[in-house]
Amino acid sequence: MDYTMQIQDTAARLFSEEKIDLFIGYRSTGFDNNQVPVLIHHYQDVEQLVFTDKSVFNLTNYLKYEYTRNKRVGLVVKGCDSRSLNLMLTENQVKRENLFIIGIACEGVMNEQGEKAQNCVECVMPDAVIYDELLGAPTGQREYQVNADINELAEQPLIERGTHFEEIFENCIRCNACRHSCPLCYCNKCCIDQETSTLYQGSNTTSGAFHALMTWSLHLAGRCVDCRNCEKACPSHLPLHLLHKQNEQVIYENFQEHLAGMIKDDRGAFYKYSMSDPDDFIM
Ligand code: SF4
Ligand code: SF4
Ligand code: SF4
Ligand code: SF4
Picture (cartoon, rainbow, N blue to C red):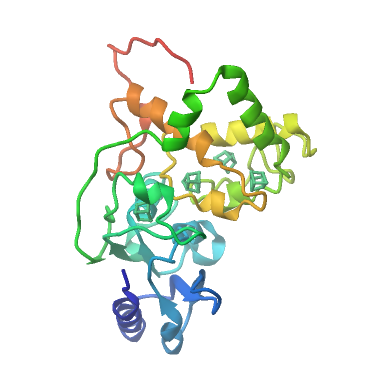
């Protein structure tokens, strides 16, 4: 999967036709073929842009900041990224008319060990669901599968599961890189941020981390698209997908097979009210 030339060409065209103010893409770091996001402001810099199976980050996260909010932006989205973009549009965080979207029919990205990333193996929608231009051959929606790690955990006794999660919370340093790297966490005043917290004091305790991360994951319940931007940003390398994928599974099974951001204007699982809901569980 290499769309470097196509993306450079499109970005160059958009700048020369004065259709965008900036382009958000990926550039190579020069080390081990790794890439980082890059914001391109000028036609002459489009040669920096690359796209391969190392283009791991969700670029829609950059749409939530003031420096892009009222600009005309070109950007690249894979399937998972496009689902978060759909949600940002539905939640009025971005204006469609300000965007030129290059969608990717994605073949999956690599993890640091050079293997296909777990979320890509389990990906339910690899094709971009919203775009102006699509690169690659779409393969369509796949059958939903329960996350492998959640399946494995479910087989352990409750006490061992509890210990596993306790270790996760113990190793959290409350840096909030996870919340800041999630495109769907755009609140100016966040209830778990140390600086603006309305709910929790910022102390770095296991209990503080437990409450903050549980609150965070519930705010993403029915909205998380499994892009794992948060996990990639975590300096403690915590398996944050365990929180989100557990919520995703519960919601899929109890809210009419809801999957976040698949359909434009779908406001999410918690808007799916039904008189026949048996109301037999609590998240
Ligand atoms: S989760 Fe799906 S869309 Fe996202 S990078 Fe992996 S294969 Fe591509
Ligand atoms: S919580 Fe993590 S995996 Fe889910 S949408 Fe946000 S960044 Fe992506
Ligand atoms: S954790 Fe909740 S309050 Fe904080 S930014 Fe995310 S959605 Fe908003
Ligand atoms: S990024 Fe990792 S260490 Fe930082 S607050 Fe989130 S879970 Fe904790």
